[in-house]
Length: 313
Image 1 (tube, one colour):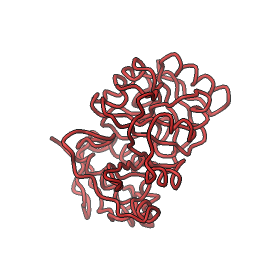
Image 2 (image 1 turned 90 degrees about the vertical axis):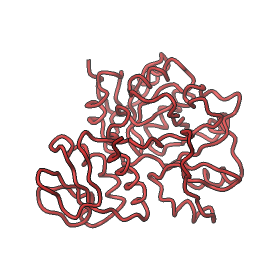
Image 3 (image 1 turned 30 degrees about the vertical axis):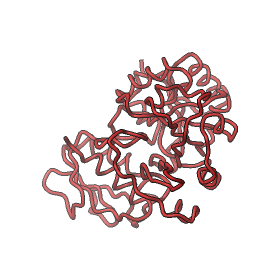
């Protein structure tokens, strides 16, 4: 049976909280992408989430909170981390912080790490659900692991509809790109995954250079697998034009019949359209050519997702 898609109402929020309290799985809208929510304090629910997504168990999950009190109960904030959180929370930024020993997020959700990936989402339905539930929710993207991330409730139904209990429909995601993930080493900010918050904005606000992730041997944050966000079709990146039998994902001007992430060359619009347009082309083509995308601003995150989508071992 496919999970029902329901509008955001007080009664559907209450229903979702009840399902979560019983160890069930609920898809929720956030400003980044739709998340697959589970009780972060329930190891059986976490295991069920991993199974539903087909997610490798060494890939940690992001815990979502709805208040400073909830965040500080789960993780320790350095002064720099606190400054960063105050600047960008609620919003599309995840911070990797030392987990508190008495925190409620279970070890399985943290993949055995001593750190915790933590985010306070901006989307009101997500925070309302967390507030009603009363403790953190893990909520990785609501898709099968490695597949294209969902930005609409219908995308969740297509990928996970028979594996979960409920889908809360908050309409299309505003950002359409997973959160940026920031860690801290020797009191210096380290970008662990580019995402919906441009790195330049973080650096400007902190007055510090944000160092790029150096590729640790062990996964230390979500979204670091080489092959991720992948369509079934093979991607050819930095293509000036499509070859025969290729779908074409353009940026800027395009030929009618193809798709353009943004006809006016707007990277914010491109990020919001990326997953939905990849999904559309994936249903029609075995190969997809993608225009070059500028590497500035949100282009950094867009190119990161495209490279992972194109990767084949």
